Length: 254
Image (cartoon, rainbow, N blue to C red; front, top):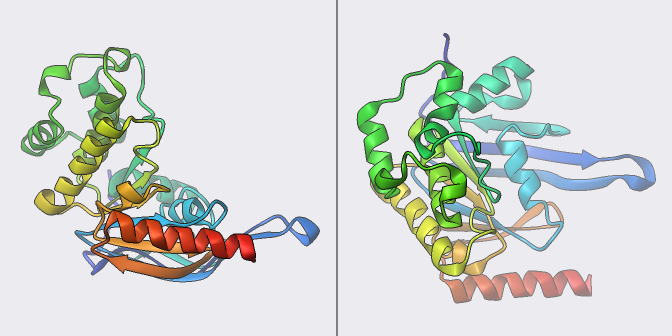
């Protein structure tokens, strides 16, 4: 089976003048307004913004889960908006990992079967040494034969993280990955994502509304009304909270 060539460029994903419009006429909504932004390899980035700011739309368009209206979206040096459906599906399967708020595990499969499922579908054998590293990193070795209903929420999300990491993707997109977890389980998952970047060289782009979650990132990008309006490097929870409060206040005044 042929693979999608992903060049090891400095950015794992980037957008150039990317615009996303829903509807037309009186119902027209500009979700993304000519955004240009890049996400570097080996970095943990968070995307934040008030409700309706476009943060989830940005992630979905960069990941090829949603089409764009204008501009360009890239994974590595591949312009994904120029790919046909088959090529885009193959690229997502081979180069992109996903972690969702709802875990998205198959209830009839064991934890190990869920972890290897994307590779099984693609007809690829996992790298056993890497798979062992991932399993030990997420601390699930004694739960591999358990099905999702036999695992806690935090354990289920760790399975989802392992599934995303197991295929060595160029980039992982995480959409509110701690949204359904209690604070302790959420901190465990965020710590795992942080370690996967520092120790395993992974690239993660995470959408979150939580200042505490964003503080685990190397960089936080803030959106408002479909535009990038601010960013922080090496964020702290208090500073992220202050920036978000200003954006939400500005939106209420506007």
